[in-house]
Image (cartoon, rainbow over all chains, first blue to last red; front, side, top):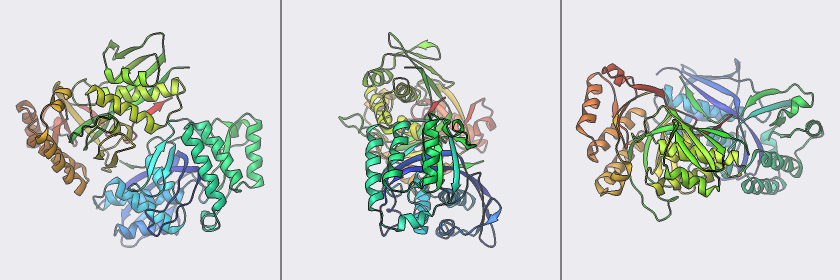
Length: 275
Length: 275
């Protein structure tokens, strides 16, 4: 048993629907989003006692604990990321998936990619911190989640796109709070946006469908709307990350509007072991 | 309309089965293989007349022509690759898939990744030059093809692995000739090897299953067997690329045995547009 390291891209969801199921590996969401080169590098070291850190700070992450339990591993898990936590970048999903990949390697568990993604997805759904980030992060690129659930149940497609992404974060939003409330409005809006992107799988149609969703699902706060409008006025294309107080743009729009955004790119690779 | 560029990894298949279907997008193969960082960079430029070149030499590639016809594009297609052609690296599949991705971008065809992979896969099957390379090249890594066909029909998993790959090529083998003959023996051997890898999805089990397949399907020529034995004697792990007179090793085994192999790595990303 040695230490192992995995990288998992961040993921901003543009729109989504919610699918509940007693089996957390079948529950999840439809929707679409962007995998980002800003992500989480997860290091797993076999240890006497389990501990989880993110950017050197001890954290409680139920999804990570569940992954470790499922894989019967006692380990020190260290995540390093430039992404803000709780702001719609799928950091908890990345921690869970990175832990699954690295534990499989470090503890020689001999599971397949689908099995590891299923474990991380189920753990994330059970923890209530995400519904579709893990399967999207596993694939990379601009995944369209046509059907919910883990790899044995879902159906993915993707928008063939690459390029720079900017993001600007105003604060946190609780995924758990939104997805545990009444979600009829959200589901209907999510389905409409999904149809739109399936009909025209381009990046600009994804951005339009995402803005439409944020508005129709009534998730757009006034301060986020203001930033998006600023970007539009500067001739750019922006929307809101689900779920966080984060605005992302695909064409340098946040910079053009005078913000000082973080910049990265679409990550085509998806989650992978590092050397 | 502008020019566009895509990279598609090479792909060596370790073992496979053959599934015929009147619909070439449903036909294909089960099996497993390695996506390689040595691949094909495909550039597509709208032109008055269609022409296809590989490493600056005009080539006839039915799969590429079919992709261009399907996408109603008249273009100059240029492939650049360090890989030998006809030697089991999926160069024709890479050319077809790279053409599909780049044409979609250059001609603004607005198709999804799955649609483009389906078109390239169907074209490759129709041309008789490959059965599973395209879907594996689209995914990257070490794909296991659990079910045959394009993305709407198949089911993929993967071995979570990375690392260096060496290969040594002795000459060409006709894919068309092997897969158009009597293939009962091959199918049975392919199914046994697939079960083995599904049971233990590791790189070393993949190598064992691949050698077992090459032997049982009676595809191992004496000269290829000699190279594999040389590698084994040097303490390394090697097998034969399906279908080509090519030996690949995962642990520097060809170098250790005194050959002067080409070297690359497992490509985790899969086919993608380039900037």
